[in-house]
Image (cartoon, rainbow, N blue to C red; front, top):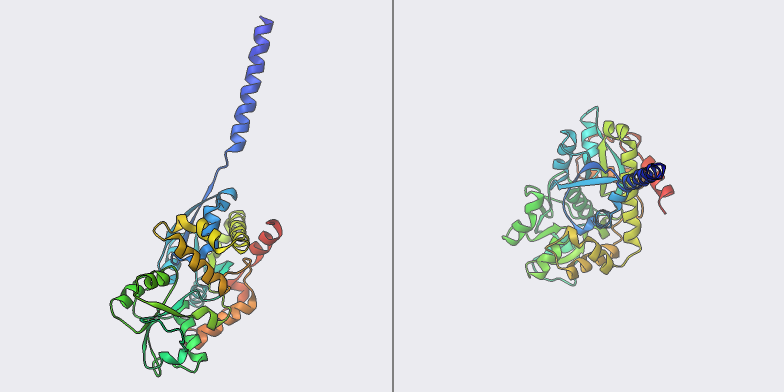
Length: 334
């Protein structure tokens, strides 16, 4: 009887140990609802982080939706439909200046220059910006980063919108390529892989990089309402860690490897096209090397907004940007 009892105790201990080990192996994931401004290879480090499993490794179940415009992403954040927005930081300036108490704060930067390309109807290997004088450009929503950065480039070239060139701002972001192929405008600014898809179809040809001409600008960042950041510090830290891991991976791998990594996020895109686009963005140095959002970059952002006539008063950097999560990520992730 004692022998049987001993075996029962031993089996019970083994079962308890096995159960605890299984429990330790199962990580409960916390859901984050992320709303991205659009789907583009321009945001490759984000898709690398998703597809390489960095968010899951940080304990995050990422629910990703595409807002199709910074205004729509910001609306989703303020209405509680999304937790984090991925968009141009100009949207956070607008909301702050409107006097909203629970405004959105920028906590991690992903891209450091404009990711759009000027597309013409015919190939033009000798293109110069002077050639857009007297033409029409589909430029995007008025007050959005793509349109304001385009204006910034034009004005720095001595080309004044309305006076020297017509910039259309009444066409929705997601409809710009379709409007161009349908006959509207002489030029259009497009992100990748849309631009190269038009090239592949013989419907448009990249003649210039807006980002190369504009210089470094904090173009797309991650933002969340002040209250969400305060209540979810550990979750935001884990999110930022995953983003930084995606940035490190992207910088240490080739365009071919990047294309393979982001392919699940672009199931209908040819891998050769993704490789070409990844190379194009690497060549113009589009991606930030870490999530830090500097004060100098914030000042330049508001310079662009002011030059476009979209800024009545400047917003304070210390209110709209926090680097605490980025700094901890840089220290923790190697």
